[in-house]
Amino acid sequence: MKYTRLPHTDIRVSKICLGTMTWGRQNTEEQGHEQMDYALDQGVNFFDTAELYPIPAKKELYAVTEEIIGNWFKKTGNRDKVVLASKIAGRAEFTKFIRTTGFSKESIISAVEGSLKRLQTDYIDLYQLHWPERNTNYFGQRGYNAHYIDAWEDNIHQVLETLRDLIEEGKIRHVGLSNETPWGAMRFLEESKVHQSLPRMLTIQNPYSLLNRLFEVGLSEVSMREGLRLLAYSPLGFGVLSGKYLSEVPPRKARVTLFPNYNRYSGETAVEATKKYAELASEHGLSMAQMALAFVNTRPFVTSNIIGATTMEQLKENIESIDLEPSEEVLKGIEEIHKAIPNPAP
Image (cartoon, rainbow, N blue to C red; front, side, top):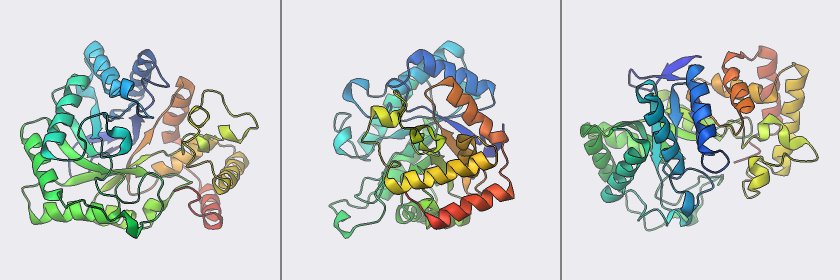
């Protein structure tokens, strides 16, 4: 395994991060425990979860993933071997069953306390805002629309104050963003620069893959100049970049098959690009999934690459991508495809 550090800290994290959002829906608790056992044995010490998981969100399954992780910590005693990240759900139609969502002081405290109890731990290493409260372009919305302007009042100072208090209480160690825009990222960073008693956002968890390199447009400069490093999620585009959906008969239990509304990476142009990446991998005798993951692993603004798997075979292949160093020919081929079909999926 290769390791980096959470920016501005001495916390050592694996370049591969274990994603957990299928546990409790597509995966059983036993399978989740098996994945954690294997990942830790392979040197993966960074796990990412959220109070909203498993996904798709469902009232009856709210926060089951955190419970699965908490039960594993209790069973194995491995809490001190893991750098643990979780998230508070933002305001949305599909989160109304959780509580009065949003990032009020009461909501943040309630979310953290709930996660700590389910995870059976005294602290969370990295606590993230799952998506912005304000209306903006995230979750597959490519561009900002003037109609997004809403009644949101800038409460970023108050959010950081609440997170600071939780850090001082020892309940969380560090904080990060997720599904955030360049404006939002800089707004948080500037607030903590001006008010130095407030905690600094260390990471940003956004989608990034061969099919979606929009992070490079504005956020990569923020990342490199400000040290706000990327935790890349959906590096295989819901599994599309494994090539498994290119067959005439899609895999029966795969995510996009089970949940057809998860079609962000399945449009006509995305399929065309996926075919070209599959051809490139084949030309060089590479696993398509490992090529796609290795590309993400090599980006200078990436602190960790969040992989997810529903089978042990997928998990093993994904973790092994850390050993693949893409050749100059492969990287050149990737850029040629990207120039021909740039960012086919938002």
